[in-house]
Amino acid sequence: YATRRSGYDNVGFLCQQATEKVIKAFLVAHEVDFAKTHDIRALLVGQVATVDADLAREARFADELTPYAVAGRYPAGFDMVDRECAETLIATMDRAWALFEPRITALLAAEEAAEDADEPEADAPDPDA
Image (tube, rainbow, N blue to C red):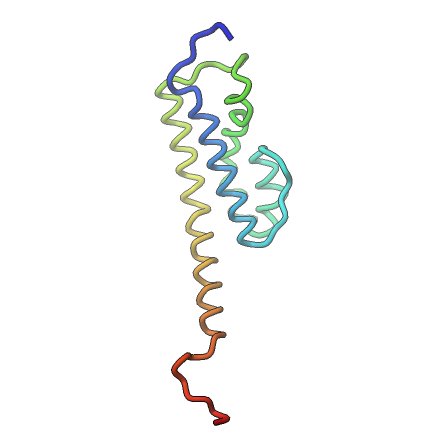
């Protein structure tokens, strides 16, 4: 296309993708099938809410990134992203990650602890011996 792009034009797309991926990672960690969509609101309402309705409501702000899912691939018709807009988009992504990443980490840590508790001690004597 003929218009000059700013150096920040991919920020929206990348922030949307990072947010979408952390939401989908949360769903995978909870063994929830998710729709093949880039619509953050649909993921929150349709799948995240089945695991944690409060989290789905709290994360609704992230839906403002959804339009950028296609902006990176089809930039015609989208306004150029300037530095101020890029900073806002990054802050939105950071907020979403701050909600989801600790929950994923905690779930994985709990699962690992449960697996460790189920494994017999390697050095423990065999009670049947």
